[in-house]
Length: 117
Image 1 (cartoon, helix red, strand yellow):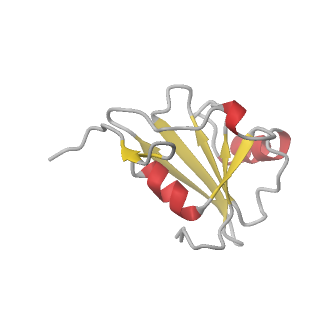
Image 2 (cartoon, rainbow, N blue to C red):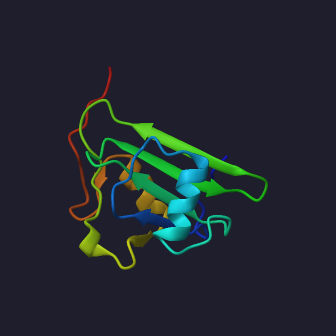
């Protein structure tokens, strides 16, 4: 289980990627495009071009996890590639929680997403 503790390192891949990618392909993206070690204990977040899907890649010491969230309506508020360096942006665990909960990190406001009643 992924625990968003204060010591957890989180990196967002700023460029969108093909969301058909799974364990090995996302692992290769971390190495080749982000220049990092996927087995270093950090979480790596990826999104698609339309910003409706997010995948998290995480090595817990015994194996690799992939977490995914697809929005029924609306988009994730994702930083632009010019906002970070080396194609990635470091986030605090609290910022990742806000991002996945629909909070615009620049304006600190809820985005209008669809919620089922």
